[in-house]
Image (spheres, rainbow, N blue to C red):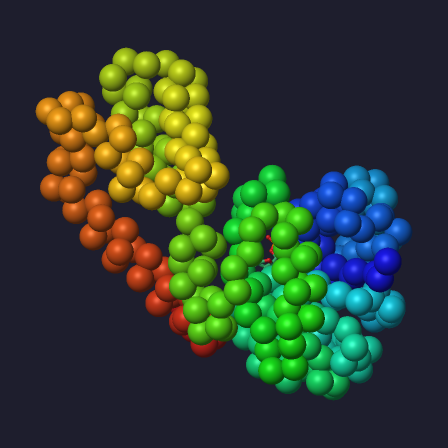
Length: 272
Ligand SMILES: NC(=O)c1ccc[n+]([C@@H]2O[C@H](COP(=O)([O-])OP(=O)(O)OC[C@H]3O[C@@H](n4cnc5c(N)ncnc54)[C@H](OP(=O)(O)O)[C@@H]3O)[C@@H](O)[C@H]2O)c1
């Protein structure tokens, strides 16, 4: 089975490695990871038994897929270092936020197929959601390879690169919106006199169960809401208050703001 290199193997890189190994899709000796510090390499070899090196050029040698997983500010130095080591018969899968496919292509000497992905934090528990877009040298086979890699830590949708900012605003930042909602609902439970742990369990399990009904049973959100909203009942009272508070409009505005920020960051506008 062909090799895979993960350059810049931090939290996201490790989540991918763990997913690939857990599913049996790749064996530890088929994966090479890199980082800047020896201690990080030791952590990764101890936890996963993969090959690890500080030398990115060595890691990409013979790799079918090269995953870029460093922070955006480190990508230029990393790619400059491997520019002439990557060939057109390899596939690059970048999960680096805000770095466009064209920037990656321009830092490489050969016409290398590049697939850019925006994964999210639940990839750590293999329930991630990623959007992927292909560059000008990426054909269907390269896209399939990238999707195969990401499928081991969750689900994947393919979009044009322009829409990756929207993906960032929805599923990239999404876990934070649900965390905020969870925090508020747990607090509400406490207001009603429930113990914190009881309130937390009620909220978290309700989120998970609702997500499973929407995803696994293909229930429409309106259907689910109507299912728990009986005439003159409790839910309808709550929904009225939420609608009066402008929750729906707040989500539309918030997610649009996140998308605009994602575009600014991709343009190199780092001041907030
Ligand atoms: N975490 C998420 O949920 C998430 C979601 C979507 C997208 N992303 C994207 O994924 C990327 C990584 O995020 P992260 O949270 O995993 O960051 P992280 O934990 O800081 O990992 C980055 C890793 O890159 C390594 N590195 C930096 N420069 C390098 C170089 N020249 N050669 C080799 N390794 C190098 C660092 O090594 P040392 O540890 O030795 O310094 C570190 O292990 C980011 O671009 C982020 O935007 C993350």
